[in-house]
Length: 168
Image (tube, rainbow, N blue to C red; front, side, top):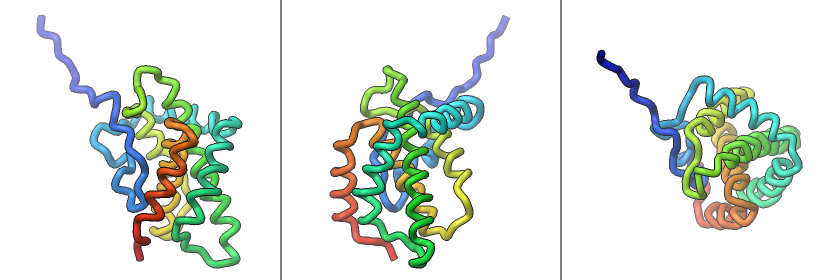
């Protein structure tokens, strides 16, 4: 009898810090999963986004990183845009908290399903200009990263933002 095996995508991806240009966006990495596992991680991440830990991460990202980002919004829209970006950070943090429950990952890896969950969360963002969408992805990824590695990561991300010239 011949047994056939299916090629499976890797279960993990490198855990990389977010970059403002989106080059480290996890869903764009080879191996990011889609399907049931990603959808389940997304759903669990949405639930975890309402935890005090996710709120704390979103507060840190909003307070320390948003002032360093070039947010493209009209003055009258800015309060709503800040709320949207804070929510994106909070969802990313929720997914990061769920991702961090897998003790086999360590500090250098993330689950491939978590990358897929970030893609699902990205797909739920409302329509917006491309530059604002890039910012929303960045803060979502930052929320995941800080939730996974701890609040001390915010200063490292802020230092990178300070040293990166803004894209125009």
